[in-house]
Image (cartoon, rainbow, N blue to C red):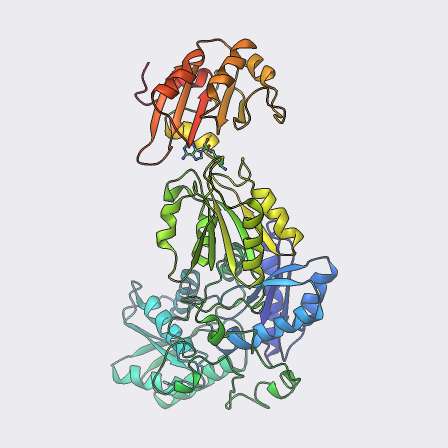
Length: 571
Ligand code: SAH
């Protein structure tokens, strides 16, 4: 399983560090078994440092990690500092690769946690008479501030508070006193200040202090401060969800309106530029520690981090593939028998994130219409025994695109490993040092029969099913199939690629003992609008299929299960 490294930005608060460490332990417990290995580390200020966390995982043999920034919104830390620190770790450990997951929020689990913190502060007092001031960290990145405004709205929606207003403790307006004054002038009598913060730190302390000052100056108002989100199960579950997403390749960062991507009034200097070191002039003590943390000429995320300039043209989102521009990968995805909704959720997610899709003729081509604009589609149409893109050419294309840093989906029909040459592609990628994964699919060997109302097994009728390629007929010198044994067997036989050979195969099966009246079902274009079926006795199926013009792609199902057909098949 892919190990997980949870990356914090660090804090001067001992309580905050303690909560982080306890939280990593909680994630470890909740993941129990489902996840290989969990470590956590900070990029600055606190111990353990990220480099120790990564080093521990590498020492335990991990070479492939999911790295999750423990941040609520994507701003300087999530877009720049943390990817830069991870890139340094990759330089330190040759062969190490990682997928960078997306920030935690917005997420319903967080909104529920905030609601619980507000309720705890209310201690039974009614929501309708309560205004909430949701206080974010604040950023020079307007997109990050907009995320806090979005969370404020989502927190208000349907929960019965008088209202929820966003505010910021640093770098953005309205400030804590400003938002509290705004609520006072709107007529608020009771205000709960809800810090949108994970763990204790200097800034949450400042929120509490500023709220207390405001309350002291306005004794007619009831101002309370809610607890932080803190180390809790909901947060651990959210981390595990983000980990699972990243493993699936779904690493979208929500920055459609990021100032590095979209021209914003007052931010013209940022469009198309890489994320640059951010400066928090109002941070305590010696700022953010940038002086030493970034003083080693690491170029701070240039080429590693947000990199809108480089990735922007590739896709409609921030391609924060933190591995740099040359860490592509290939997913060999089984697309199912044809209908667009018979692909797996994981396959669909990879397709949504793909830069290049190499597609077979029998793959669910309807899905291509839904790809993002600009995705390159390579047609590897393999017409049986007709012109085709040779397997070597396909393998070479997969490797070349991945080496160019693209996320490649090899979209195949059915399951990639059922007569799909999927493993040859996996081997070719592995041999070339390209990261490759397989996503199983719904195979036509089982689904074609099901879509025609026939189960391939049924209690008391058939306790075995054999899937056979009919590509090479009985007697062919290269055939690896024991046709005589299939003739003696009594269960279900499913023939793929057998349109031209089914007559010959049927004769050999009868010759070796299969009853000539064994029912056979032919299903052509299973799952497609033009799906057709023909049934016949085993000794007549060759002639019947030819007479009815059954053509590829078709599956033949033979055995007693065919008599169970639930549709209106001919008797
Ligand atoms: N990997 C694929 C099979 C590839 S071999 C899978 O798991 O389904 C190609 C053969 O699959 C075809 O000759 C045909 O026998 C079968 N096939 C694929 N899609 C089909 C469909 N929609 N209907 C009927 N047969 C299909």
